Length: 125
Length: 108
Image (cartoon, rainbow over all chains, first blue to last red):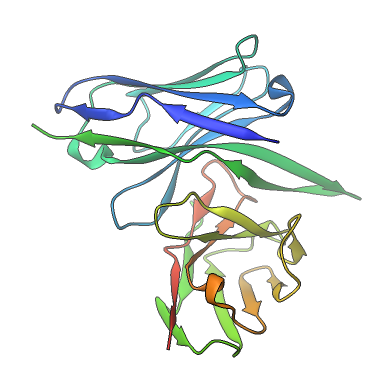
């Protein structure tokens, strides 16, 4: 059974730092691309960051670029999000999500097929 | 960045009736469109990918259609467990992959 379990959330002051972790099990973690997605209280979903299976390709949303760093440790089946210079608007539940590609003929569809339960990050003084 | 717009924001439907949710992209996303269901306090759950393919374990009452810029999620006969928030997501032109703002499906 695929499981993704986030941890590391909590209350942090503006300008502070936090490191989120996502422990993966039930699948070959090193074969999958991964993402972080967040959801502010009462709001919709916002993609935050992507990392390829090897970690060689990384993307960020403009809203977090230069402040957040995504990484992974395939030996530990773990995904991370280092969050620095946190702002009130970063307050959200952060989900890790497995990226999946379905190949057909000439192309592929991409989607997030498994999500963790989320970890709440609150940025407040 | 592709903007995804869902309508209506809230849809009130009686159990057993059909619900039709819409998602529009600001430019073509081909068929690279997914739908997710989210219940309060839970993570999103994948329903549909490739605009029309049900994910594993998703009941046949859920169906997706459309391509390009216009997409529809239809729930043919609403069950009590279907009342939730639904999001569409495009993953055709990325980064970023973008989500719609969600449609809340509530009991009438």
